[in-house]
Amino acid sequence: MSTTPVPLHAATPAASPAVAHSTRGQLNGVLFVALFAAAVTRIASIPAIAGLGLSPLIVGIVAGAIYGNALRDGMPASWAAGVNFSARKLLRIAVAFFGLRVSLQEIAQVGLPGLAESVLIVVSTLVLGTWAGMKIMKLDRDTALLTAAGSAICGAAAVLAFESTLQSKPHKSAMAVGSVVLFGTLSMFLYPVLFNAGWLHLDTVGAGLFFGGTIHEVAQVVGAASNVSPEAEHIATIVKMTRVMLLVPVLLVVGMWVNRSARRAAATDSQDGSHEAAPRKLAIPWFALGFLACVVINSLHVLPDTATSTLNTLDTFALTMAMTALGIETRIAQIRQAGPRALTTGLILYVWLIAGGLGITWTVQHLLG
Image (cartoon, one colour):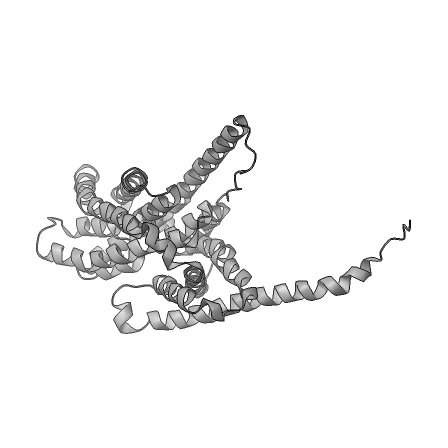
C-alpha cells in the first residue's frame, strides 16, 4: 500500500478556479446591487415620488421585490452571494454609520419632554406591537417584532437593524416595510390637516413632540411638520432623532432576549433527547455599538461638516443597497401568507400612535414642559 503524500500544489489548480469564480460572482452581485441602488436613488429623487415622502430605502425594497419576483431568473446564480452580502454584512455597517445623523447636543435641545416622549412611545409601541402581532394576529415572533420596530423607532432603518439582529427571512422585513410605507405616508398628509383644523388641540411645541414622536420615517416627519411651522419642524426632527438614538439600547435588550430564548429552547430539546434541530447562532448586535460610537463622534465634531455630509450620503446609498437586496430576496408568495395580518398589526399600532401618542404628548407637556 503506497503512502506517498499528495503534493499540496496538486490540488491548487483545481481549487483556484472555483474560488476565483466564487469571488468574482460575489463581486458581480455586489456591483449589480450597487447599480440597481443608483437607479433607485435616481427614481426616488423624482419630484412626484419625493413629494410622497418615499425615501430611496423604500423605493429600493419595492423595486427589488418587483425584480426578484418577475426577472430573478435573468440573474446568474453566482451573483446571489453578492446580493446576500449586501442584505446582511453591508447592512450592519450602514446601520452603524447611521449614528452620524444624531448628536447629543440636538437631543439636549428638546430636553426632558422630548426624551420622555420618545422613550414612552418606543417602549409602549414595541410592547403593544409584539403582543398584538403574536397573540391577536397570530404572527411569528420575528414578523411581529419587525412590524413593531418599524412603527416604534425609525421606520425602514429600524426594520433593517432588527432584521440583522433576528436573522429573519427577507419577506418578513418586506411586510414590516409595507406597514411603514402605508401608515407613515398617511401620517404625512393626515397630521397637518388635523392640526390646521384644530382637532389635535396642540400648540407648536406639542405638534413638534407629537409629529416627531409618532411618525415612522425621518423624511415623513420633516414633510409633515414643515406644513405647521419651522419651529415645529425643528422640534419634530430632533424628537425623531432621539427615537433613532434609542435604537441602540432596544437592540441590545432584544438581542439578549432572543439569545435567552434560544438557550431555553436548546435546553428543552436536550431534556427531550432531541438533538436534530440545534438552535441557530443569533447575531449579537455589535453594529449598535458602532452606531453609538458614530453618535459620539458626531457630537464631538471630530469630522468636518463636509465629511459628515459625504458619509451620510454614502450611508444612505449603502442602506438603499441593503433594502434593494432584501427586495430581490423577497418572494410575494411568502408575503401573502401573513400580509393581511401584518398590515392589521400595523393598523393597530397606527391607531395607538395617534390616540396614545396624543395622550403621551399632553401628559409630557403638562408634567415636564
